[in-house]
Length: 160
Image 1 (cartoon, one colour):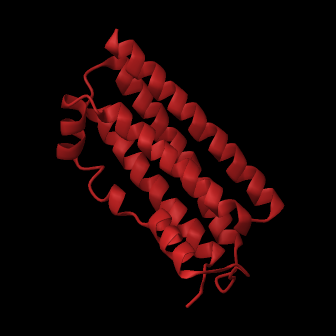
Image 2: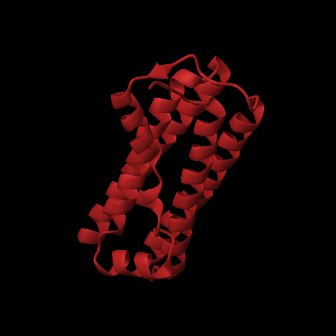
């Protein structure tokens, strides 16, 4: 059976993913003892807050009943379900999870993975958007790429 995805539902999922990333970055910033790391994750938290606002505006501009004309096969449905699935984000903003990530020195890899997840999700979302909203999301994708570069640079600096 083919599934039709609502652009509004996809935008709502984007809002929730951004909120989870924001929560993770806030806890990393709070728990980090390194000033540069604390500042970077605080910056990332503020960026995700702006992304939440952007996706809320996009979501709120869409009529509740709007659906896409795109119908997906079962394979594509499974793929889209995995893209929307938030189980990856289940515990990322708990203090215990974050402290373990900081202690194990995996916090940068996790954060880069979350940013890559955002890029993937945003790219899958593009076909459902109007041209003005598409431009906003393309800019958000570029910001996420910049976040990955900042995280990679900080990871390198801390390894030296």
